[in-house]
Length: 394
Image (cartoon, rainbow, N blue to C red):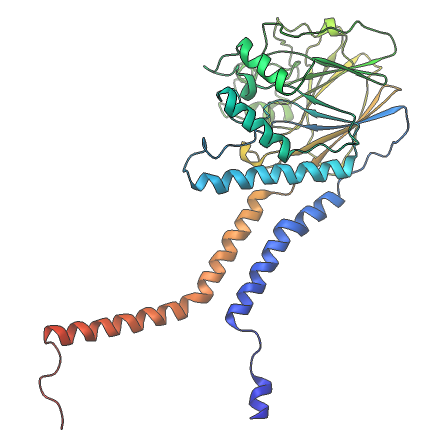
């Protein structure tokens, strides 16, 4: 009896399932994030002659009411928004920025929402993307999902004024030796548009939701004439089939702003376009996809760089997503890196695999229970319908 008690297994099926699920949840929700955040590159420059900037592009906070498959959309939108919020606060912890910049498309349904719903969505956005007190300024650039401008969703003065009012926004900000200037590509009404006169010795950073230097993807594909794939322009430029991108929308007066550097979003990709300051046309193109790398740009040269920051949401259909971090020095150097987030799709696949494993573990006892019920049901039907034996042994 003693030997049997000692040899009795202590881990039952239910205990194993609980331990297994706990390990999967801890790995997905804690370990992956902690490992990723601690391995992000840190730009070490805390002097008074530098400004630290954290950049978030295209978060597109979701609303469960407008997501498909309601009420299942409550879970999907909650998970997507929580992923963005968690990554944002990890990026804040890692970068300790002076300035936080949101490069448009803050809300997924901002442009089509009523005034009441827009206020509710903005409040939800503020709760998710809470800004700590050590951040000196926060800049909100409107995107097409916020004020319209894409497809049949038109930009209106009311949408622009509503966005600027609720976010208390101005198109310019001066901080230390830097002029931050929003270029209103989507806004043709020039509402609340301020200009900053050029001052020698100050660094002028242009902020735009829509990229300013490059041609549209459609135009590149027309010039490339190699294929019709959506991402062909990226492949073709990497393979040097397209060397120069020499088209700039004529209505953009980038040169008049005397830019030193440009940050933009909208493309959901991590890209670098480069041209000259006297033409403001993209002539070079690079994909900034390396992990744990810091890129250095010199704004004192004649070359003008534009960095498009990747989306921070996994719902944008991209395999990689993250936050941009930059340190701008008074000397004119810009150090930039991307803090890539862990793959949420991989984590969701792990959850599905874990559920499959649990299903297989409980499948044999479930089949046994079903077998017992089927046999009992068969006997019950046999006796009721007279299919049972007519004679019984005495």
